[in-house]
Image (cartoon, rainbow, N blue to C red; front, side, top):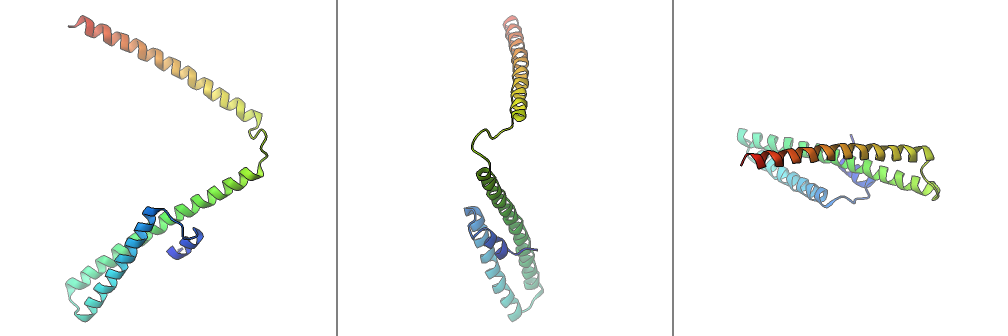
Length: 137
C-alpha cells in the first residue's frame, strides 16, 4: 500500500485546497492521538483506552480515505500528462479520421430527429392542456 508521502511526491506536493485541509486535519488528529496516548500511559483506565482506540480507528479510516483520494489525483495527473503528450505527438492538421466525422454527423442528425419528434409531442400535449383548461372553467 502506498503511503501518503509517496503519493504526495508523485503529485509534486501540489494538491487541491480541500485535500490540503484534510491533510492538515489528519496531522492535528495524529497530534491529539499522541496526547491521548500519553494520558493513557500516565493513568490507564478503560475509558481512556476506549477513547484512544476510537481515535486510532478514526485516524486509520481517514488515512485510507485520503490515500484513495490521492491515488485518484495521481491517476488524473498521469492521464492529463498522457493526453498532453498525445496532443503534441499528433499533427495539427486534420486530427479526426474521416470515418469518425461521418459518425459524428450521423449522431447529430439522429439527435435532431429525436428533437423534432419530442418537440412535436410537447406541442400537441400543450395544445391539449390549453384546450382542456379553456373548456373546464
